[in-house]
Structures are given as C-alpha cells and as structure tokens.
Amino acid sequence: MNSEKKVSLSFNSPVILTFTILCFIVLVLDFITAGRTTVSFFSVYRSSLASPLTYLRMFTHVLGHADWNHLFGNITMLLVVGPLLEEKYGSWNMLFVILATALVTGLVNFFFFPGVRLLGASGVVFACILLSSFTCTKERKIPITFILVALIYIGQQIYSAIFVNDNVSNLAHLLGGAVGSVLGYVMNKNKMYNTSR
Image 1 (tube, rainbow, N blue to C red):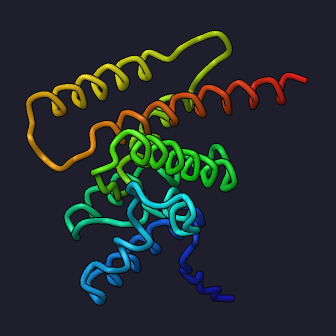
Image 2: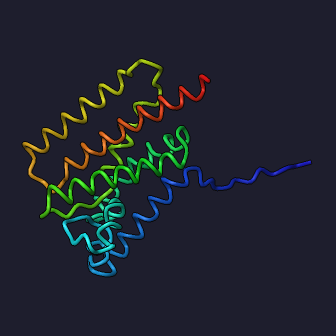
C-alpha cells in the first residue's frame, strides 16, 4: 500500500500566535482609523480613573504599535523566543507573563510619566528574553547565560537612555526584563519543587 503523508499546519504556540495576530489587526485598524483606535484602546497614558478604558489600556497597550517597523521589530523576536517558552512553561503561564508585563509597564507609565503615551510589545519581548535565560536553571544555581544577558541588556538600555535620543521607552524594556526575570525564577522554582515531591 502506498500511503501518502499529508503535511498540515500546526498552531503550535496559541498564546504567542494569537498575540501576534492581534498586533497585526490592531495596526491595520490604526491605519484605517487614522490612529484613533490606537489612541483610544491600545496606548496607555494619564487619563481619568473614572473611565473604564483607562483600566483596559493598562493591558491592551502592548498590542498597539506606531508603524510596521515597530511591529516587525517586536514580533520577529517574539516569534523566535516565545514558542519555545510557551512549550516549556505552558500557555497559561505565557499569558500571565504578557498580562503581568503589560500591567507593570502600564502602571509605571501612567503614574510617573503623565505626558507620555506608551504602546508596543517591546516590554513583553524583553520579558521573554530574560525569561528564556532561565530555561536551564537548576536548584540553587544561577545560569551564567542569565547574568550575561542581563548585563548586556541592562547596559544597552542604560546607554540608550543616556546617549540615544529616540522615542524608544527604555524603561518599558527594563521593566519587562525585570518581570521576565522574576517570573522566570518563580516558575522554575515552583516547577522544581513540584517535580521533587
């Protein structure tokens, strides 16, 4: 018998792929509405605490991007690192990482930078970069890869904040990296504890 093997597509990383698709949809809506949807729903900035949209934007600002270059820069790295992390930690944990990063960066921007409108997935990307360096963590051992990534990453962000005049929010990157580091440590510690029982 001649059995043909069929090739099929695999939705291998549901959270990361859904996040990517939503970012594309949000940017398309941005162009269709001349930026109104992004300002209203997908950016975080100082606004009335009486408005429900203020609380929604604390999470949805990570879906908004300024242009295609901004989107592709973030999504390319996320698609490289994200699926591996989702396979290791699970979809629910990856969703939590995204939501936690969005909330932390959103709150800090809201309270400390009232004149700045923050948007983009770069905080999430940097959370994933730092989280990825924890993938080989053993009990009571800090991986050298984590130290190297953290030093290079933090040094680059501090340099950019001081010497490079651009519209990139280095604080969002640092906060995202901090969230990824903390959650990476906690998730790996819990995983080791659960497997050792």
